[in-house]
Amino acid sequence: MIKHLQNNLSEISQLIQKLNNKQYSEKQEVLSFASIGQHVRHVLEFYICLLFEVKAGVVSYEKRKRDLRIENDIHFAIQTIDSINAELSEITQDLPLKLTFIFALEPSCLEIINTTLYRELAYNMEHCVHHQALIKIGLNNLTEDIKISDSFGVSAATIQYRNLQCAQ
Image 1 (cartoon, rainbow, N blue to C red):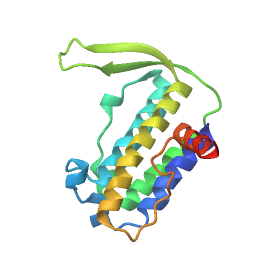
Image 2 (tube, helix red, strand yellow):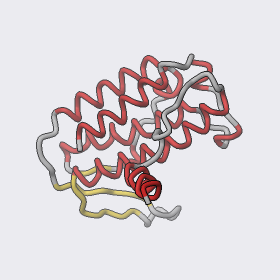
Image 3 (cartoon, rainbow, N blue to C red):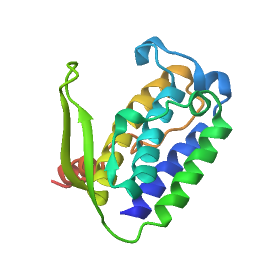
């Protein structure tokens, strides 16, 4: 699983290297006035929360820093991806975790549930793929010059399903 996570993040890194900072940080109507950089920052910060809070045994994605450097500076985003990939390389076993999350606007709606590191890594992968689909929309809106893999932003399960449908 770790190699797949790293490959997925590296695919984002390779893609954003083809952009300039203006393209990367430009807010687009088609993305509900978000930018490609904001989507990249969002998924990277979920990984950061998980990887740096795992030692404490409690993860809260709501506590992410929202570091604007990730969403505005391609080089910093790439460095962040490299750092996440290095941290992923250090994972050798699954660990029990508690996940805290807010599921409604009322202050009393904080939940704590049992989870594991591997379960949260799987969630982060699916979350990342979802945002890659949005990034793909933003890239297609910006330019036709950048070639984007047909599989970018598509889950492995969907690709397998499509391949089975074509084979029939």
